[in-house]
Length: 526
Image (cartoon, rainbow, N blue to C red; front, side, top):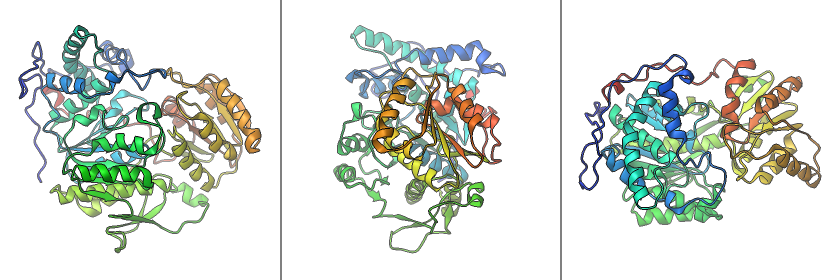
């Protein structure tokens, strides 16, 4: 299948039903010039201001969320006002509780290395909102973001007026940013777009897409207020992305959620490819503890990929560039998905795909920023992901660990602390300042102190309100042969990552997020 040329789509054009039409034509104009420092640029700040003023469930303090904000009718109406750019966009749609960001990035990187133009949409971002929109491995420019906001704004404002006339709320932050992703990738003429679900799946804004392939990663407890408090209820929401006759790859192993996925796939007559049934990964023999040499090489686990599971390995043994045996399962799901794309006519070379998946790194996912001392950055923010982090920590040749942590207050904080405390010499509890959902450090510390007596551990527990001072406290006290781990939330890692990478003796293969070089020259025609 040859790569597609850029589409002549301009948006704001009549759509098939003709029942909704934008009040004024909005075409993509010349990309504005942005100051070298976007934070000082008025147009950029105004664009961010327009987005941040919307209802944003990534930032809103826990509350009872209106049911109307979790349905697709409003998203469909917004897309119609914009000319339905998503309808002709081939998509790999990725849902799950853990691993979906890593799988999305692995798949997108493999598609790119196979010579196809690929868009990647993920959330939340670590440092800059532009990270959500990645074209051929590069995040969009601030100027491109400004142009995207200029494009979407008239449709959003029209939708606001329509909603207000009915006593309803206008588009949310995630609906708008998802619409921007569809428009960006459609105009860039991507061959494939990889879309990570924001939350759930069935009612997620990304679920207006028409996928080529669906992937469901591991399922565990998170967002229980919205998705349900059983694994089967959560799986039902995740399985809502499954479409009729569209292949589904899953790395879910637990029988309870797997039964739900199987039922939904059968209902939709969607071919289902399960880890352990249709494909398998086999870890290479590893000792319980990594050597210092292995750590300096990155510490990633090795595995072989098998399809069918009882068959010989396909390709050579692979060693991942990311820490954690759980990443091998993510990589297996990515490889199975890429093989399905190949079966559907996409030009995916097996060896190229395997190299791409093995070499993928995702910032903030068990990111080993330094070795002497060991410094880990991990966005783990629920009990299952914290458990995966602790499994890695126990294998590293590090003497004593200090954890710098902050949590969202709607998470299961006691369960996460119960897992972290046994491996911690010290816990520096702080807050993130970029999001009002942060739990109060003193309340978290009180939970931690109660748990230490319950589980009979004695780590030092500190509270430091400012996250930068919390990092400084940990960094100034780290022992020879010890390590520091920053974890508990996307927002904490995002807030501290630049400073950490600037201060530690950084590994040569770890870098700040890509410099904002032009990712394309086509947006000027939007």
